[in-house]
Image 1 (cartoon, rainbow, N blue to C red):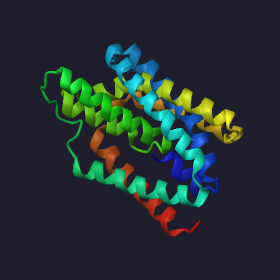
Image 2 (cartoon, helix red, strand yellow):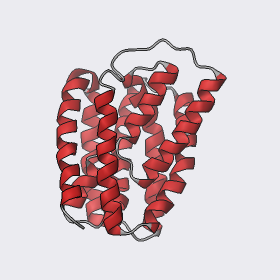
Image 3 (cartoon, rainbow, N blue to C red):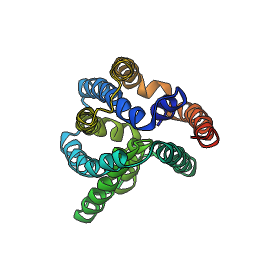
Length: 224
């Protein structure tokens, strides 16, 4: 959520900011995937399920991005970011307390549909899409926040690679920015996955909400 608004504030056109961020997300996903795999926290059956739904939806979202104007896209990104913050504010305990729910065929069908639409949103923008995936599995499957983070990492890694390839073919990736993001995101994500249970969800969430709120307001008020 932070990466795209930050790139926009640095002056990158919206299409290039989204495209370059997708390369950075690859580093973020791969580093934490490797660390959670080492900790044996990933359920690869659930991870494959998430991947199928997200990647299917993301193809629609990516093509939506390529059709929109730069000014409109900037405003949409700011609005979507603010709406995403509301989800976090309204669900302060999401992912903190474990829910004991038994998965059913209906819950799998509903979750696939929700993940497909999250995939569209993730391909279009991406902000808080990981948290939305977590909410699906917290409420429909009773997973903890750490479980959902671990299980979604393989999916988001493959999703980012797919999206990055589309943007590369469209000529929208700025290579020096993209690979700087890739390196930084890889290191930061590995540290985050390594210390996930020690850092504390509530402390990170407060800092995160404040920073993203300020970025979103500047994008909305800063003109085209």
